[in-house]
Image (cartoon, rainbow, N blue to C red; front, side, top):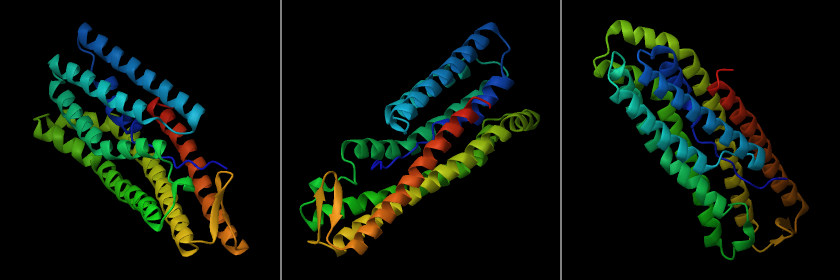
Length: 264
């Protein structure tokens, strides 16, 4: 059974943004070239994410960070070209940067989990060590709630930024009509992914509580926890199975998100 806690960051939530660029721009040759390069960037990011999933069952934080950095630069280039869509491009780029900023703590947490897996109890020598792992679970829940709150607000934020940028009402309606379906589908998949994170975090907290309650009556052997009490072993196994099911479901959802980003 896998002992990895997986966190999927909201890379592909930009699908709605990408649809807006792809379908509402293209007035000049230079702009078409920039759009093509953005499309290739998106395809490359999807390929890297799929490679990560095939290898590890989770999208690497490096893949996520790289996509954010490259995408914001490309959006800024599109906005700098001017034309009738300049205001839209600036609003989109601004939202992308906000999403990147909101995701940074999550990306940092994922990197920390890679280096120090919270389910590895070989380094637990005192109850204080367990407390550290409990804080990880609490942090997962807090960040999960924060990023989902932001994602839920993205659609409203997008339309407000367009309005504040001075985009005409007709253009805003056109933009909304072309982007909302993909945007909302991506958000719904993200909501399910976040629920998987919540399940894993709660299961981790359950494991820590169990280990603390049974302090001195368990040991770390063959890369797993072994309890003296059979009933406690059963409870531990139950918690680990909850985490495993959520992890497997999350991987399925991550692949679904990639399909959404590709317009499937």
